[in-house]
Image (cartoon, rainbow, N blue to C red; front, side, top):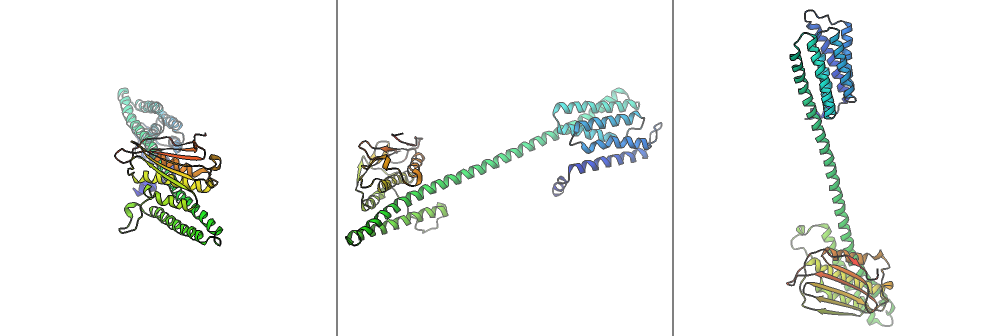
Length: 406
């Protein structure tokens, strides 16, 4: 195997040159060693014809058809001068093989006919019966051309295999790139949800504490307590995200304190932080509350978190309402405010990534998200998630983010 690899690195032109030179030398040596009675000796003229018969083979890979014609003409010329049949015939066979191995079936058959005709001529020239000469030439030529066509088919299959391998490698790299991109988007969405909410609350409370630091120490102390609680919770969620990035769930060490992802069970804590930030929030629950799978539960929680964060940042002194409606087959989560409406509720930073992220989460769990002006003014975000009446999540494609105002 190693020797074959080394041979493949040798330039083809060098190999063909060696073949041509060796073939001419062997032809001259055999013709000088044996001469049938009545045949002229292999003189200088015969040596020139021998070289002319083998020399075209140097270019057999570049112009196989032309080389076959030249080699056949040289062979006929050699026999027409009366010189005995010799190793020079092998050069024409090699040229016919090259045509069959590098050209289509039609050209290969035409080359085979030419080669068979030359062989038949050589047999008749030296007194062999016509039938025997034709039969021998057809059989020999057919074997050579058969192997040439097989080599061409093998080359074509190898080429298709290389192309398919390259295509599969490209598709694998593309899938890996898309997987990395999706994971980055997921991580960015998760970090946005964690950082945007907690930092918004901290910023508002820090401003309040600074404003009333001397006039109302009690309010300032309460704001600082909220900042501490919010920052600690934000750090816990960031640690959870980083823990997921470092290792898969199966690699988590035994006994590691892996906090569960937040869900609607922690809605009261979220609402309390927003109230401490100065935004009145009313929560209403309709229907029979049922547990959701972790992913859908996190989706609903993040939607409420992002919506209330937008109220803190953009709705001024507005109040907010959070409604959970557990229907027979779906959960509807609605967050509305009585602020200035969509024109004042557009995120000042991030280019609207919060709403886009909520829409992606909704689609991931078969839900739908709408966002726009509320019926009584202000801004309203509504999330609908399919749930099993017995408790659970029903899959199914749903539309993404839509806006009633669009």
